[in-house]
Amino acid sequence: MLYFNENKKMFSAIKELKEELERKNRQFDSVRSVFLSNVSHELRTPMNAIVGFANLLADDDLGTDEKKEFIRHINDNSDLLMRLIDNMVDLTMLQSGNVKLKSDKLCLNSMITDLYIEYKNSEQVKSKKLQLIPCRGDEELSAVITDTNRLQSIMRNLIDSALRNTPGGFVKFGFGRRENNMQFFVSYSGKMFELENEMKGDLNGGDYVCREGNCGLPLVIARSIIEIMNGELWTESDTHCSALNFTLPLKINKGLMERFYKLGVSARKNIAL
Image: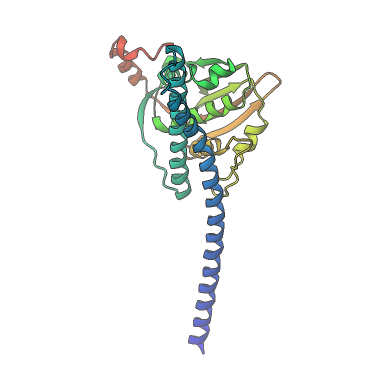
């Protein structure tokens, strides 16, 4: 009798586990469908632009200025496509809990300068006639140990989101000290409402659905990676501008900055704007 009862409990537990797995599979299929729909939409936009402008370049009657403009569009959309692919990889790693952080030596002022150079001639900035404002921090705070690729990816996702939600005016980004942490910011002359909604998305719930052609996935990924790096992301807004802020507990390395300046002018050219 005891053996029968034990078997009955075991079969009951197996049945419950099977039902739970089937429920999870149905949920996963639903999330996957939404994800694939978003991916298809997001990737098709830059791909269409790349193919379209590449075909236009085949016109023998094009002038030099037109060719340069078409090439700029192709380069901009290629960069966007690469960032989308990076986000898809990050999403997969985040959902599987397989995100691994590295410890790199980074000059933050150099990173801010590189981002400014990367974006200043982009289609989003030029078409909207935006003022792009890089803000460097104190030199003694600039040399840090962090995951360089992750930090750059976070900044790009925040800048892209700000550019997308700014019809005109400015986009400003930089860093500074906040108590025992390093604070990074992206402020802009647009509204915060849509971005606040995008930040609430759930990576595993599939609710980062595209809204009017804009997908909230980049901000959700940025928020998730910031949290893994023991940081915090929050928003601020007033009548003049909105801002995306995040903090990270980065280790400052003053000796590293001294080594940067021993490299010579050519190696330091991107540190100063």
